[in-house]
Length: 515
Image 1 (cartoon, rainbow, N blue to C red):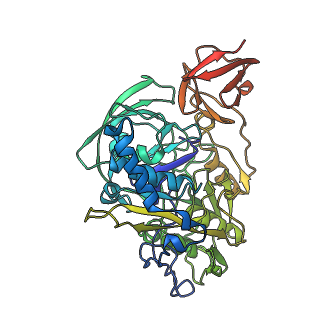
Image 2: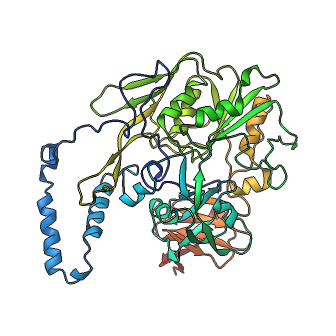
Image 3: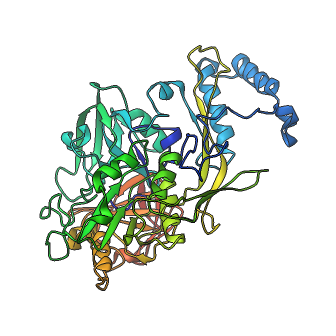
């Protein structure tokens, strides 16, 4: 639940939410100082003319005729020509071209995914959960939405998804998992999961009936119950007393309704007596629309730069705040984690760089690309040929520092794993309460934690439950059938594993001792 390397909502699939939600697809019109003739993202912008491949630098050797010749030879002479499928070859060619770019934020969106609403935001048809994948390639549930089909069916935060409708997920991308799990309301999907929270049964097949999901944007209910099974939906402090002197909101993503939702939830906050500060929680927030991000950020600033847009061959575009923000006086603490991405990073860095907030938590994801969606038409399908979701520029924070691949560092680092949460509660939220009350931050133990935690170990993950230890290596979930003396003694180097001084090699998902 609390330490997944990458995350997407089970709402979209490719494009907007592939690997993580990105600032996306709207014309920017944030009050007068943010309004001009330019746009930030691409859906509402007329596509710029695309040069013919033969005229673009070193691409003149890219010949469609050559590709056609290869396909013709394969279809006539390849020994297994009966297995050649035109659509399969086309998709493989597209995937190969995009993979060569080494850009995780550029993807091809199939027409089916376009029609399912994978380029939309705010409402979708699916199971109502976030899903991610760690560096080892294992698909994992992040957080089921409250009262969603996923939650009602018994899907839990942190579940490892090993099969979808009986098909093993080994080697799947997040996008493929999202595409397989999403679907029309009323249809069912069968998920085979491994629970990592120490409860039984450890492995379970769960039937989820998909539904229409309204993606929540803003809530005054804490993201995690502050103390499991004891505090409910209340904001409480370390003594489990109701917090009435601090306001709290969780922004799950930046949608067209986010700003109005904030106004409705917070009201005229700064004229209300008794509040010593505001906690804005953007943990698990993968971004959203750039218009919404800028509008929301502007309400917490009276002046200063919000972000800088940089594109090849163009002068930097600076977006600045305007006077008259609704929440410009109250002290603010921002909570972020390693899954706070894109728009969440713009929001956090803008407030910190302008001296309006401090950040408590962990370094953010590091998603700073500008992405556009270009619908494709050069095929025989009159409905369309899908879309290309591509990176066309970079976001820089107000300080001119990069976000892409770097992230935003917290002012006060407070780690949170499931093990820490089980023992101490939501220590990041508790630290924010303490800070705003002028109290010292209580340190929590570092390193591998207790039952149910997921601990990153170089190129692998270790999954601990009450009864078993799994090593996630090269995309495989490996059950370790012996006691480990010291969790920290595990060292991973490719397929080689050192455990307590003994050496093993991973072969087809099995740890084989090396003499």
